[in-house]
Image (cartoon, rainbow, N blue to C red; front, side, top):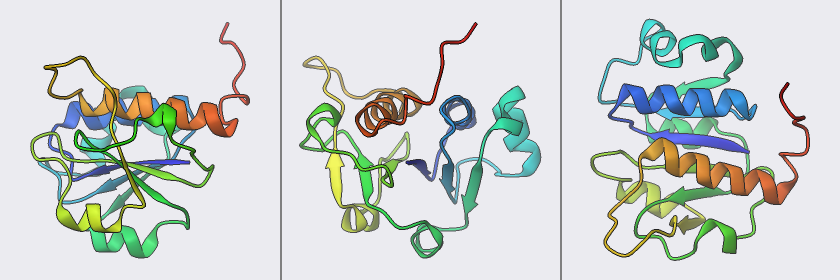
Length: 155
């Protein structure tokens, strides 16, 4: 299982995704260009003390991501998806991708996606924070594939 952010705009959301992925031992792919400089220093600042625990892979473009990523399905999480995560059958080698905070995912991402999911919300709610949506989808994917079983209760 992997989480991927497509051209993130907000460094704090990248930081939250890094922390999320560190806590669930899930690799994070970051597809550039970002709305902020993606430097080692910026990543360290965004990740706080979770950076050393996270497996973050930057990709210079979506084409580079497609070329370099491990095999498995690309599952896009967007507001216009049809299927909610709890009604989708995840596989352990899926990559869950979230679009840009300001513009969502580009047409090339939709074209490459094997499925487009949406997080169910109350009527009138427009969207969730990208890190929150990632956490919901990742947790459900890990729950379905047994990926949560490796974690013991923190003490």
